[in-house]
Length: 245
Image 1 (cartoon, rainbow, N blue to C red):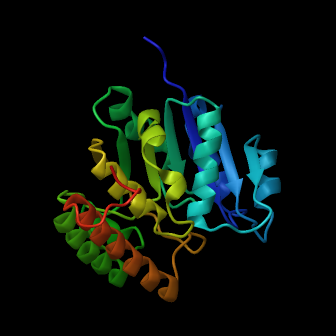
Image 2 (image 1 turned 180 degrees about the vertical axis):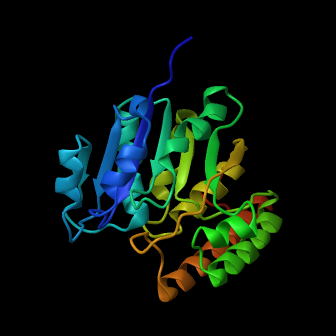
């Protein structure tokens, strides 16, 4: 059997203090093909990543979280990856679990996997997640599950893996350059009937972990439900969108 080629992509912005810890948590067998795309950081993320031997691509100007991921996936496709792992380099996600994350894709059981930090309340809160974020996450997750017809414990994870078939199918180049990119990726994958699942991962909040501020968070929530509404209209044949099947 062919051994699948796994490419790990890191969409980075001001990750100088955490990229090293993130890198060394990645299993040694998977460190060969790592791409970091720097979205015009104001610190030395680029220099630190290059010292680690990571392949680095630099945006000449800040394109946003979604714009960063677009570059990540285009470069991964150029490397002829079979599986692409998206890992935030802020040390918020346990990279030692990458093998567990991608195993169902390797076995052909799923096309899209993500790590969920919210399998239970106790673990999430003990891991440092603020209580208000926990309850907001749970509420939004419940609503998304209802409107999308799925049953996931989290929708906001920054630790995801995709089959190459999925990345060649979903029109990610049409998605937003902003934070709602991840939500569009999931909704589009659902529209194309790709198989999606999750694994439990530890919650790990700390001072250097990235997070969305309140104003941008409000915009993100609005855009999330607007995209779900567009998807429902698309399914009903009322307003067709090129983002979905």
